[in-house]
Structure formats: C-alpha cells, structure tokens
Length: 472
Image (cartoon, rainbow, N blue to C red):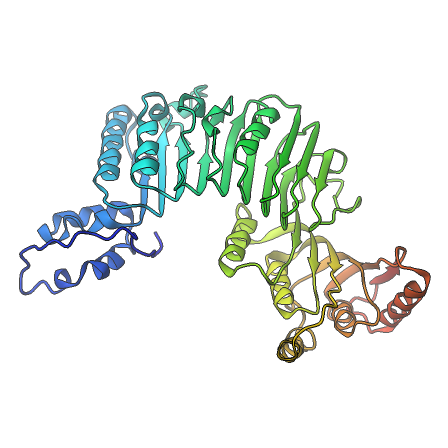
C-alpha cells in the first residue's frame, strides 16, 4: 500500500499510559498514522495489540484494503467455507471499527458475499457511513469450485437500486460481476469515474442505460463481454474526457457523442472500421486510422492539452499502460499536438515513450498550428524549451524509439518548429518505412508552399535510406 494522506476527519485526542522507553508511542497521532500508511491494512490493524496507545491509531486511516481472496488462496479446500465466513466477519468488523471518513476503500470478496447480503452491507457502510470517495469492488470464484467449471455468477442486480448514488462517491471500479439490468446504477449523477473490468453484461442496451444514468462521468474504462453478441452501444456525455474500451466481440454499432473527450484508448475491439461512430471536436478519426487487424493492435487517440492538470494527466497515463506487459504499449497512435507549445511537446514525448521498442505500427500527428499571440515572457520561455526539446541533438523522444509509418496533417511548411520536428523524424532514425504529409486539403497557394517544404525534407539525409516521403 502506498503512502497516503490521513483522513480529513480529525480523530478525538485520547490519552493512554505510555512506557517511558517507548519513544515511538509518544509521537503524535498524525505521525503514527503516517507510519501506518506505509503498511497494508492487515498489518496496520495488527498494531492495535501492541499497547493501549495503539488501539485506535489505525482506525483513522483514510484508505482501507479488505482482501478476502488473498487469505483464501492459502486455505485448504476442505476449510474454505468455514474460513471464508470468518474472514468476511473480520472484514465487516474492520470496516465498522474504522472511524472517520475514507478517501478510498478496496474490497475483494467471493461470490457468496453477493448472495448473503454481506456485500450490500459493506457497500452501505463504506458509502453512507464512511463517505468513501473511491470504491473498488472485485469478486472471485473460490479455487475449490473453479476447477469444476462453476456456473454461478456474482450478480450486481441482487443489490438495491441507488446502491452507488451516495453524493460522496466519486469513483467506482467493479471487477468480475455480471449485470443483467441497470437499476443498481439509478441516479448515479455523483460518479465522475466508472471502471467496469472483466465483466459480463446481458447486452449493449443495458450498458447504454448504465452510462446514461451516470451522466456526470468524466472517465470511463470498459473491459466487458456481452452475453448477447449483437446490439448497439451508445455513449452520450458532454462531460466525458477519457474513454478506454476493450470489447472481445463484435457489436453491430458503437456510437460515442462526447464533445469534451480528449482520450480514446481502444485496447481491443473487433471490426472497428465499419461500426464505430465518434462525434468529438477534439479527436479526429481518419478512415485509415484503424488497422484492418485492429482486434490485435490497440489504437490510442489523444488530444494533448497543456491545460490538463498534472494529477489528471498522471491518472490517464497510468491507465494507458494498464494491461500491457512490462508497462509498454504496442499498436498505433493518433495524436493532436501544438508543436509550438513546449508543454504539449513534453507530453507528446511522455506518450511516445509508452511504446515498446519497434512496437509502434502507425503514428498520425495532427498539428494544431495554434498561432494565437503569446505574452513576451511566455515566448521567451517557449524559445528556451524548444531549444531543449526540438533543436537538441538527442533523438526525439529517445534513441530507441521507432515507428514504421507516420502521417502528418495540417503541416505548415513555413513554421520553423514544425519543420524542425519533421526533420528530426527523418534524420534520426525515428521513421522506418514511410512519412506521408497531407497537402490535398490546402488551397492551391498554400499547397505549393507545403509541397516545397516537403521537397526540402526529401533532400535531408535519411536515418533509414529506404524511407519514403510522400504527399497525399
């Protein structure tokens, strides 16, 4: 467990007799909570037996992880049922004994807790009593019955309507459940983040209803399988900024209408080219963007913005790497970036470095060409940044990065930063096979100017002699 801030709910000052030689116990509660934040929840709870001074310290943690599966995986089959009941009761006691509010609560449980209303009780305590902001729920099938092709399911539909509608709950992650209807998500306008991982959903229309009920969502992560293999999934949300999808089977149609979305991360989806409709001013999807074999090749579309908060960017980038071996992506990238903005160039560098060596198939770059006037001090800072980022002799983003094919859109032949950027891709062994530069949409005079700049690129010494540079 990583170190986190202590609960914002202030603990009541209690006084305990302390041995003169026990210097650690003499520390204030705030420091003791900081020490315990380095421990797992299980380890922190155990400190309560050290002395009366430590009985209540762990109870003010702002983050709890209650993992039944971790203990049960070490339990012999014949003892599974008895031990699971004991551990579930211990988890209930830990949650009820906690004091104050929770920033996050992570609960891993077995299928049986869905059926005996234990899960319902945990959720109710975590949300309505503990005012948990970030709730993660993961269900497992016990090892002893998994081997017999167990057909039981963890039905979320057993939970009451409005289960996740408490105003304090901002983020919800659900793993391993089955969802037949959408009632459990009624009135979930409180949610900003929703992650549905390794889940079965009856059909696409149910997921459409769930996402419509969660109308304030800004981040959606979907890794789901539909029990009915056909249907239309619609996402209409003008608050949505980040969307990640993994669908192992074909849908009849997938429609996304999201005016604010900046990231579309397609990790795994079948026949995307023909059945995907995206309406978003921030992301440009070209007809050839999708690899014909896109079911095997993830595609990331990213509208880079220097206005993106650092914390939000870090969360996005972590999600972009989730599920990939060694935390390195493969597949293709479509990115919109202002090469004249050093902050956006730095983010572009971060994104490119997510790829494993020689694993980027196609790279599409839409150059924003933002010519809005800047303050004099900002211009000075930008010039210094570009000296470091674009005119540096070091390869961009590094010496190991390779991409097989590049397409540049909105390339301005008279823009020095854009030409310098394109030149580095050619000279420094960044592009292996082909660089295509769009000129067909420019007016005649502008087209001739861009084509002249492309001719200059063709004359540059190529990192790869067989590299082709063309207009389209």
